[in-house]
Amino acid sequence: VGQYAGREGRVAYTSPHGLPKVEPETGEAAEAAARRCRWVVGFLRRPKERTRLRANPYGDYPEQACFWVPIPGEFLEVVSGGEVPPGPGGAWGLSEVTQALIRDAEAAAGRPAPEDGEDAGRPEKRGRWQKEEAVMGQEGSSGGAGGVAVVVCFRDLHAEQKRGEHLRQFVPAMESFLQRGVDQGLCPRFKILIVEQSNDGRKFNRGKLLNIGFSLAAQEGFSIFVFHDVDLIPSDDLLPFYCQPPDSGSPVHVARVWDRYSANKDYGGGIVTFSRQDFTAINGYPNNYWGWGGEDDELIRRCKTVWGPKFRMDFPSSGSIRDLEAMDIKQKTDFLRDHKEWKCNTRYELRDEHQATWGSNGLSTLEYDLLARGPLEHVGDQQPYQHTERIHVDCKLNGPGYHDEWAGVDFLPGHLLG
Image (cartoon, rainbow, N blue to C red):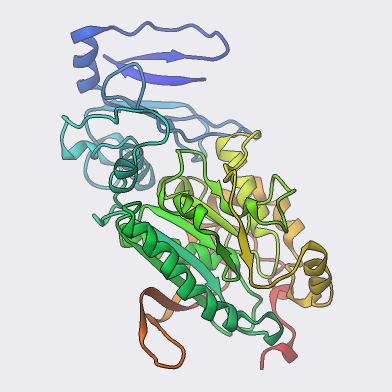
């Protein structure tokens, strides 16, 4: 099914497969209908069927936005109305998640939520918006001024990895890099969040740390989220891919220009950029990949589940990444072979659980304890960086809603905990 639009209690739809179509009215009648029936929310899910989320501000009606919500359900439900009712579920009986997605679709369309007024216009151009519209027109739900949040997962536990040294190089380089974006008018503000896992006896959980950083940054109103490894520093020509929001349904794999993994079209690690709406649509990263490897593959699986099996991330056509680890793919593979205890030993079992658990394993079930939070200080003079925050967290065990039967193999060997 292609698009649905409500009109006077009827449903008009188009389909790429030649299904019947209820012709919409035009002119004043269509505008009046659009004002009365602004929203149509559809749930369509059969066994083993995949749904997609799309925000379409260019439908048949001037003020209509249609999208599919990736929430499991047994039936197709079509509801319409002039505004999102207040309270849990409102008059339509919609969940809070659905109401939030409605408001996200409005933000993606570049206009205020329904309760903010009926006179909002749509962008004058389709596709990638103008720089000012793209950055300032996607304010977060907390009313912030948009901007770029760079979320970095971190733990300096094993001396061989040299993560502390990487952090000391990464932060000043990235603050200077992103400040140029502010100075050039590419983005209004930026923040770097270093989300650090406590010495909890468990392996490193990259996915959950990135989910935590996203959750905290979203509360501050950021609209562009760059999920970043601490050992990668971009070249200056990649700056627009940090400051410009991705098109809806098209997150950007900035690290595709990185030599180590550039040959793998389905690789989604290193550096990826999402809008708030799209990262929410895929339910973020999984929370239960403990150890190296697998969470970036699950990210791609989630994108394909939401946007279709032919999904591919966008990527820059030029640019370069400086790898502070200074390892090629063979050297990295050999390094991990020598440290098998750091790897995720359940990645293939968790892969097989994807279809059953992706909707309940991620942002929707994120649990953690915030241990400490404050500005990251310079080494030596102890002066804090202006735009970097260090966040120390206890990741806790796997949350409710999915399996945890392999948790016993997620713990580090005792001799590594010192």
